[in-house]
Structure formats: C-alpha cells, structure tokens
Amino acid sequence: ATQWDYIILIGDPYTMEYLPGLYAQGVATIAGEVAKSANPAEVILLMPWPAATSSSTVAHYKEVVYRAGRSGGLKVAPAGLAWQQEDGVHGTTHPTTNGAYISAASIYSSIFNESAGQSTYSYNDTLADSVSAVVNANKDAQQYTGNFSFQNPFLPVNGKSRRPQFTNYGSSTED
Image (cartoon, rainbow, N blue to C red; front, top):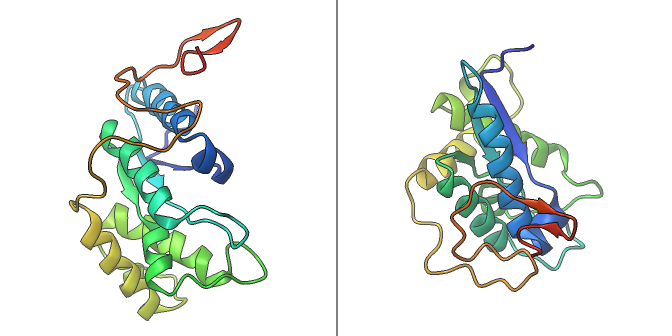
C-alpha cells in the first residue's frame, strides 16, 4: 500500500560470497516484482564489503553486485569501493560508524548525483565528497570482463532467465 520512490537492496554477505547466483536470482525476482507496480520504485543495489573475518574480497563483491545490477538495468551504489578507498578499516563492529556513513553517502550520491555533504545532515563532508567521487567514477566504468568463473552450485554463467523456477528438488539453479 506504500508507494516508494527507491528500494535499496543489500545482499546477504554469505549468499554473495558463496552463492552469488542465488543473490542474482533474488535481485531479479525482487526487481521484477517492483516493476509490476503502476508507478514502480527505482531499485538500487548497495555494494557492501566483506567483514574482517571473511575470506572474500571487495573485488568479488564488486563483480557479483555489478553483474546482477547491469543484467537487470539497475543502479549500483558502490559503498564497498568507497570503503576500500578509505583504507577499508575494520572496527569492533561491522560496519563502523564511518562505514555506515559511507553506505548512506553512497546511496545518497547514487540517487541525487551530488555529495551527501550537500544534504541537511552533517557528519563528515570530506568523507561524503570522497564517497561521491567514487560513485561518479564508477557509474559507467567497466567493472568486470569475461564470464563469471567463481565455482559454486548457483553459478550464473550464461543464464538469461530473470526468474527462478522451483521444483520439489529445489530451484532451477540447483537443478
């Protein structure tokens, strides 16, 4: 019943790291449902970054999120790339206060095409400007090449289907 202007999707880190095809299918399913609305919201994918205990990399997250976003014509808010540019500091919490602000500023810059430092909320305008520069630098940048080669049971190699199909044995990707 609520009309949203934007829907921000933040992938589950475990799914993005180990089951990226399932993440891509989830994104496609949600975006497809949003598109059915009479006045659909804009879906934006937030690119997170791995926790300190993860064996994954920012490069893996980038490829997974950008492949899912580009295949569905969705905008990506590259918070993980901005976090990496800010030296990727891990604190005792994930994300840290700066990390949470990087995510918010990345979303803001992706939506409004300006630095979150221009908003009425004030936290760290220098950080906001840095995040905005990362968002702008990555809007049309090539984020990956070739086929996706990460081996997992939900490999989204050349699948063109934007809708998972389910059977009593599991999803179409498990089949």
